[in-house]
Every structure is written in structure tokens, then in C-alpha cells.
Amino acid sequence: MLSEAGLVRLWREVYAMTDPVTPLDYDCGELCESLCCQDWEEGVGMYLLPGEELLLAGEPWLTRRWHDTQRYSLPTSWDRGAWFVTCEGWCPRSMRPFGCRTFPLTADMSEDGDWRLILDPNGLPICPLIKVDRPELLQPAFRATMKRAWRKLLTVEAIRNEVLASSRRRRMRIPPRHA
Ligand code: SF4
Ligand code: SF4
Image 1 (cartoon, rainbow, N blue to C red):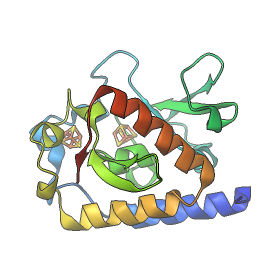
Image 2 (image 1 turned 180 degrees about the vertical axis):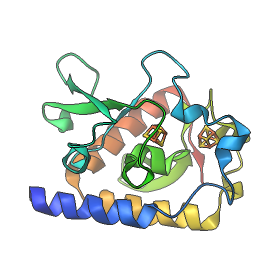
Image 3 (image 1 turned 45 degrees about the horizontal axis):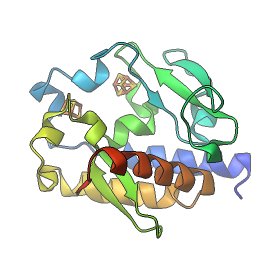
């Protein structure tokens, strides 16, 4: 199990490697008026992955709320709960959460532990890149970098457990589209 310092180091590496890449070779926000950075539905936000909160604790532009596993439907592997964050549609780009970096891709894990990147079906109502259902249109550098980033993150047991739990929930709703 990684120490707190080890987790911070890992997250710093992941943020640094994913900083320069974008889904398309131009700002894909032009396609949708940057819907994923807006309040497209009341209360939208994202969960930080385990350990990510250590890097983002002091960021004043993020509103954080603690969601307890007793009250919210969260993977039990998340121990006590998780940080749910929202923003005001602006962030210092170098500190945007990992959920914003990897979107419209996410990791999907099968029961035997194999995993792949998929277009995130949760973003279907808003993201043209998911609606078009052509992962090969995303920049190869973006896909390759996200794959490396997720591979690093999935060495952390709590993150692996979270991805498996999310994948199970997703499979109950909609089959994944592989990237
Ligand atoms: S919703 Fe999709 S297309 Fe629009 S800015 Fe976000 S990732 Fe890009
Ligand atoms: S943190 Fe930044 S990238 Fe993420 S939704 Fe907010 S403005 Fe968009």
C-alpha cells in the first residue's frame, strides 16, 4: 500500500503527463460550447479518485463536499467516502481534476481485472465526441497518454476497486464502447 507521500508523488506524475494532451487537435469546446465545464444539470460535479484530494486540498476554486458511503451509493472499498467536487466553470488548467483530463474516456474493468479505455457513457447526454461513437477520432497521443496514466493509477488498490465498482454499475446500464 502506498504511503500518503507516495500517493501525492503518483498524482503529481499523472497530472504532469496528462497536462499537454487534449482529445482533439483543436479545442473540442468549440463543438459544444464547453458543456462539460458548465452546470448542464443541477448538481453536476465529479468524484475525485482516491488520493487525488491530497493534491487538490488547497485549491480555492473547487468546492468540495464529503460524501459518506453510508449515505451515498459509493464503492465500499472507498472506506469512509469520497470527495465530490464542483467548479464555477473555470480552473487553473494545470490543476484540473483527473476526471476532466480523461473525459470523454474512462477506464472500464472486467471481473477478471482486465481493463480498457472506453467512451464514458455517463457523458452521452452532453458530449459530441461520445455521441459520434468513434473513439478513433480522438488524437492518438491523447488516447496513449490516458492509457499510460490509468495504468499508473490502477496500481493503487483503492483506485482499482473504484474502477471495478463503477464498471459493474455501468454494465448494468449500458454496454461499453471500447477506445
Ligand atoms: S463535452 Fe466533449 S466535446 Fe464538449 S468540451 Fe467536453 S470533452 Fe469536449
Ligand atoms: S475543473 Fe476545469 S476542466 Fe474541470 S469542469 Fe471545471 S472548468 Fe472544466
